[in-house]
Length: 207
Image 1: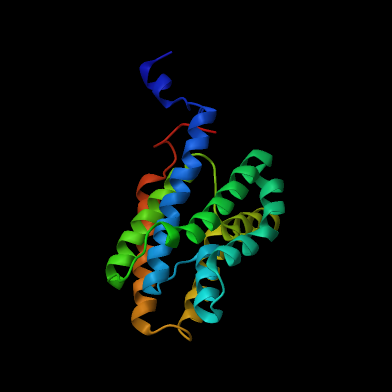
Image 2: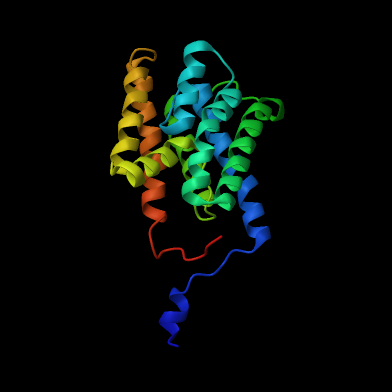
């Protein structure tokens, strides 16, 4: 077997690596969400919908995020299997817990909105990348998009784009235009990190 073939073979993650990825990835995502919340900036997906509802009705993000994801676990189980679903449930629960607990750990008195959008986006992007490399998701929107693609032939990327577009369109009626623009900046940062670093063949380890 050639050196190239050996290098290209996927390496299976050890259990402790998967277990470490969960708190590390979710802590980074939670920090990004706390910055977004402080600056009244949102993103797409289930986290974006929870932030939008928080800004609209003042409800707690942690509770909203956890509840929004509940209907999608069955889809995750059917499409991705039990192990993926279990890791995803754990990730959602940890993010909900960490976002709820963070104000008791440290307080952010003020933050520049542009800084929050960029640094929060970096933190969330790196956290999502860490989880994705251990076959873990944090939201039902992507699971729903994959399910609709499989069952009804709708392109997952377009479905997710449409849902995110609806979230940002609703934000136009709730947030100032500059906050919506910063939300787009933060979301662009998140997606750029994932697009540059989460490519087929770049990282071969599997869970």
